[in-house]
Amino acid sequence: MALDDVLAEVWQALLQGVAQPASPFRTLVLATAAADGTPDQRMVVLRAADPAARRLEAHTDSRSAKYAQLRHCDAVALLGWDPARRLQVRLSGQATLHSGDAAARAAWQALSPLSRGLYRVSRNPGSVLPDPSPNHYSEWTEAEGFAVFSVIAVTIARIETLRLDAHGQQRARFDFDGDVTAAAWLVP
Ligand SMILES: Cc1cc2nc3c(=O)[nH]c(=O)nc-3n(C[C@H](O)[C@H](O)[C@H](O)COP(=O)(O)O)c2cc1C
Image (cartoon, rainbow, N blue to C red):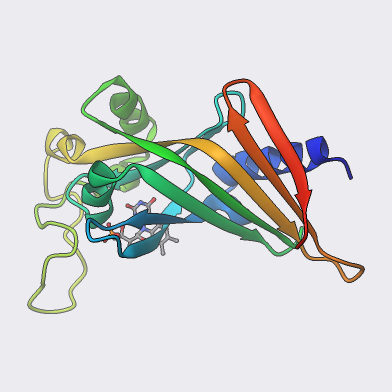
């Protein structure tokens, strides 16, 4: 397999993640840095992928810890594993946050009412509860929910893949700088 084919497969798998809820890259681990430099990570749903712009999107609540971390430091890493392809994908880049703008509005309008309900909650994510009762989704109005809804748009600067194979592993790296892609095979 050529390096170009590896890169094409990564974007195809990411696009599948957006389109097919059961596909492995539907969710990715999003890693961020806390203000004191401590690493943090959590699952997010992959909501959009644009190979030409090398852009991925996820959604979050602007009251969340990850949002505060991203405002402080826009460097992010994303991680996925496709067991059928036996392919690990590591991505890194810079995040841009969209709240209350046209990008956020378009993403909000494309969400199901159920998903919008996740944001229509008065209590801040991560705040302490008196008991383990589930959150009161959809208690707020649509406008109140939209006010805390955010798109995390990540421009990918590097992709690294590792394919497990009984005959030997294959590792590849792709660095993007404008229209230039530097691709290389690496020792696994
Ligand atoms: C499968 C799965 C998908 C998730 N998708 C999202 C998501 O798209 N956006 C989000 O903010 N949180 C998502 N979460 C919840 C986060 O992983 C995390 O628990 C929560 O957002 C709080 O993270 P934070 O305190 O780092 O902000 C998801 C959790 C799981 C298990």
